[in-house]
Length: 48
Image (cartoon, rainbow, N blue to C red; front, side):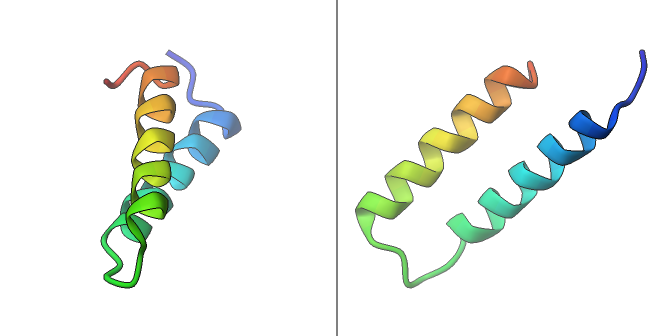
């Protein structure tokens, strides 16, 4: 399996979203949006 630049970018985006989700100053709306983005990205990466 070839590891591409796009794979790396997706992993870094996922890590950033998970880190951001851990922040305390998020509203419930922001938290829900980030959670949804994480789910979509994990599905696209086939790690859901």
